[in-house]
Length: 124
Image (tube, rainbow, N blue to C red; front, top):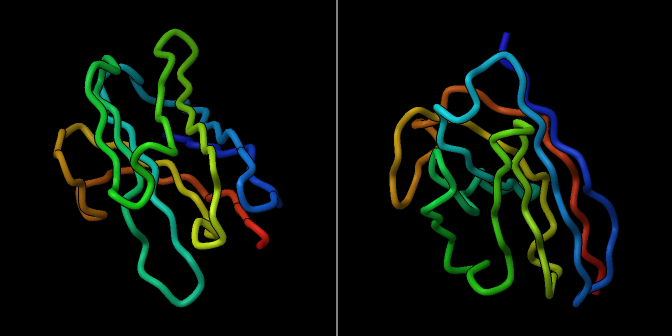
């Protein structure tokens, strides 16, 4: 049974930093592309960042480029999202997701498994 568990969310002031983690189990981690999505209240779930099987390729949404960094550790079956220079508009529930397919701009329907999400709140 595939499980994805996010952690690291919380409340932070604008300009601050948070580091999210996603721990995966029940799958061959290195065989999957990983990604972060987020969903703000009243909005659609949107793509944030993705990382390839080995970690050699990454892609980011324009809204987070230069501020967020995605990474993975295949030995530990974990993925992380380092978020710097946070803005109030980054407030959302952040989800990790996995897929066997690579896409430069992933869409939600491409992903096979999802975590339960972790809340990030950025105060102004």
